Length: 248
Ligand SMILES: NC(=O)c1ccc[n+]([C@@H]2O[C@H](COP(=O)([O-])OP(=O)(O)OC[C@H]3O[C@@H](n4cnc5c(N)ncnc54)[C@H](O)[C@@H]3O)[C@@H](O)[C@H]2O)c1
Image (cartoon, rainbow, N blue to C red; front, side, top):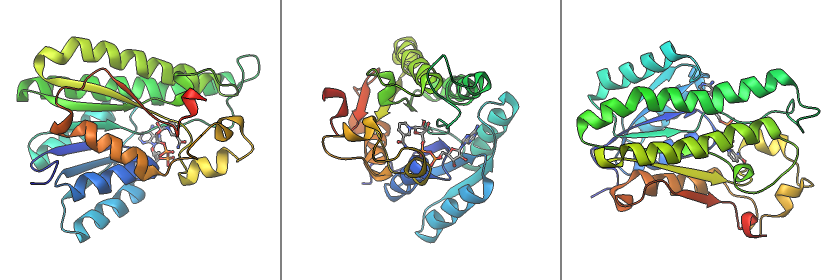
């Protein structure tokens, strides 16, 4: 029996990086995938890869910070697969417009709050009632090492990921009795294409990874565990995938 046999997972940001790695890992464990991404072509390419391996996947275009778009991506998934058991919120990320509060571009603060925090709120808000009605589900939200330890240089992003962490813990409390588990991943440096261009090896956060930076597949493996019934007693936790950086 595969670990996600019979389950359907919606992955936001499923077209690239960690979301893509999770999509491939989930599909290999039997899940059907709904891949929602601003970049439709990227999501379609991942869906095609999954189908070529014999899996089932639907690519949907959509912005997680837009309530109507979130509704449309969820509806598309429900229409195609009948239910959604797992939600993995991977859409998001920082930018070079971020910085210390005294210097960061103020519009970058609202952009990251809208995408990383509000986007996570919107997908959870839309899917939790569906999961409750179905008797349960698993939500995995991506925060960041920056929300767990003090770092410098990305205060808007840090604020948004701190919000994701705290909000997820509140949701875990609220929905446990309905069988909805909510857990958080807090990655350190993960060498996705975007980050490899953005965080250079001389960045202090990079230096702190005792085991070295992670690959997207390392984070995907943790998401797979949290999505599976192996984690049926795990909720409200923050799993750090940071090569030990948080104990440095
Ligand atoms: N890579 C890292 O080092 C790292 C570390 C900690 C946390 N994270 C978090 O992990 C998540 C994934 O990061 P990644 O490095 O894989 O990024 P990535 O850029 O490789 O992939 C992110 C995907 O999300 C999509 N996306 C962005 N905004 C969106 C929106 N508004 N609506 C729908 N889709 C959207 C992009 O099109 C892209 O396909 C992010 O939330 C990021 O903050 C990454």
